[in-house]
Length: 175
Image 1 (cartoon, helix red, strand yellow):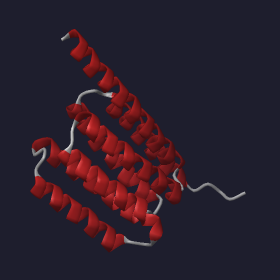
Image 2: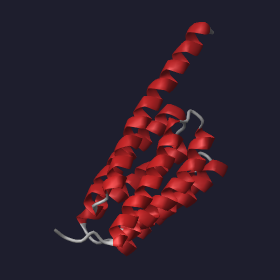
Image 3: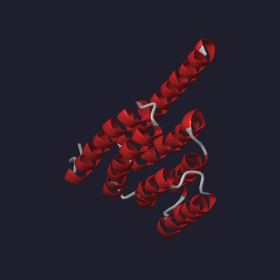
């Protein structure tokens, strides 16, 4: 049996921290709380991917920290969104190692569009789709914790979408 390296263990530990932060974030019905917690979670994801040598995913995760900070201050800003899409593409181009980097790139692009241009249920739907791309990226990187984290993020997003729809329906009924 191969020895488990300290880098591998550290990567798994960091991914579990990201998992906890993301679950709390996506369970929130408040977009502002979601964004703040995602800042910290993506720092952890960037570190995790770097520990696993998945540089496109690490770079895009680091950019997501900037994206979240920008989108909180400048929602629906098309120029900033286009700039972040270009930066995401540039990071991928500079660190590209092959087809295994496609899911991280797709997640970064989809998440950028969703966070800048959408809110509420629509934003969470776009982020759920991005989470599925991150699941693939984590599987390809060999991250057990990251794969579980993104799978649970996907499920948590879906549950939160259902809760938001139910709340909207109840507000409509009660007037």
